[in-house]
Every structure is written in C-alpha cells, then in structure tokens.
Amino acid sequence: MTGTLTIAGLGPGDEALITPEVSAALVGATDIVGYAPYVARVRPRDGLTLHASDNRVELQRAGEALRLASEGRNVVVVSSGDPGVFAMASAVFEALEQAPQRHDLPIRVLPGVTAMLAAAASAGAPLGHDFCAINLSDNLKPWPVIERRLRLAAEADFAIAMYNPRSASRSEGFARALELFRDAGYGERLMVFARAVSTPDQRIETIAVREARPEMADMRTLVILCNSATRRVGRWVYAPRQAR
Ligand code: SAH
Image (cartoon, rainbow, N blue to C red; front, side, top):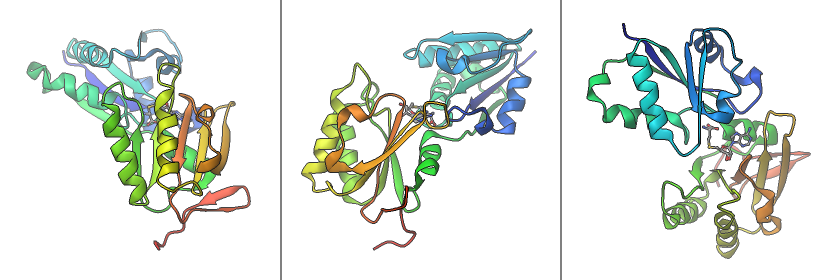
C-alpha cells in the first residue's frame, strides 16, 4: 500500500493564517515530520505520530518522510510560513533525487503565508513595488555570496526581505549587512524590523538604516530594507506602485 507525502506551510504563527487546505491535510495525517518547534504547533491526537527533529538534519528528515510514505503512511512534512521558502520542500525533492524507487509517490506541496508577506502586511505595503528575498544564514552558502546579492539588490533598488538575519551563533553577518548598506549610501532608506509577526510577541519597528543596530534583529525577526521611494504615512510605510 502506498501512502502520501504532503509538504505544508503552517504560516507565520497565528492559527487563523493556516490555509484551509493545510488544515485538511493535518486532519488526514498519520504522521507529522519536521523541526521540533513547528511540529509542536500541530495538536496531538490519537492515531497521529509526531516526529520532531533538530534543525540541522533536513535531508535526513526528508528521507524519513519519504520512507514512511512509501510504507503506506499519510505523512505531512511541516515548515513555518511557506514550505518552499528557505524550508523543507527543497530538502524533500533533494532526498527524492537520491531515491529513484520513490519517484511515483503521490507528493503535494501546499503553500503557506510566508514571513515576508505577513511582516509587510503588518507594516503597511513595503513590498508594493519590485522586491526580492535573501536568506542571511551562511549555514548553506558562503557569506561572500550573501554580501554580493545584498549589494546588487540594493543597488538595483529592490526592497529586500531578509530571512534568518541573526542568531546567537551568527551575530556578525547582519552587522556587516548594515555596514554595507551604510557604506553604499543607503543610510536614509527605511528599514522594517518585524518580530514574531502574528504571535502575541509581535513587534514592528521602522527606522532609517543609519539608526539601525544589529541587536534589533534575532531569529524571530524578518527585516525589510525598503526601496528608495518608500515613505511613511502615519504609523505605516508603503512603496508607491510607480517607479522613479
Ligand atoms: N519557511 C519560512 C521561513 C523559514 S526561515 C517562511 O516561509 O516564512 C526562518 C526565518 O523566517 C526566521 O529567522 C525569520 O526571519 C522568518 N520568520 C518566520 N516566522 C516569522 C514571524 N512570525 N515573524 C517574523 N519573522 C519570521
């Protein structure tokens, strides 16, 4: 008997931001696989096995999900936000590449509300014009690549959504990113720090790049460097639709 493998995004935190499609997949699941804090967001019930793992074992976790599905289980791999944005969907397909015998498994990827969209919505409309997303973690790519992308994206006047800006073990990178923006002359651009969006700990702060300090970001923060046309209106910020 063949099971199913569903790769689902749980959104940024608030249950109201989990899509009905993802909720239905969770109801039909026999097994939940994922990083422990995300698995903890799924309510336990009879008949549901929770497989929580450490953050660093993505490929192993994906392989386990494929194996369980091939044994007839209905497996849901959970990520926060959207599963295709710096999350488990890529890891599952990488594991699938290494397991040709599993290529016929029924696999679905269910989108979720990614952090940058929830963050932008709570600040106004800073992603209303062209933008990009860059992961500041150098766990899986060298720092010079990150720095080059930040420099070129800022030069092209994209708004830049920065995921994983700063952790206890990676406190340097974000400080260097701020320095890079200042040195390139973007000190007056607005920067949004959106922490724990859609949770009781939510905090949204908008300041100029020149005033930003590295400690303002942590692993629960999504940082947006706004484009040069972005301005404040009351407590909101927005990027006008028309380019200059
Ligand atoms: N797949 C996720 C991103 C995983 S990377 C998504 O689509 O949102 C983890 C990073 O996402 C965090 O370091 C932080 O930068 C951001 N993030 C996730 N949830 C967040 C939230 N509720 N508020 C602010 N940032 C969040």
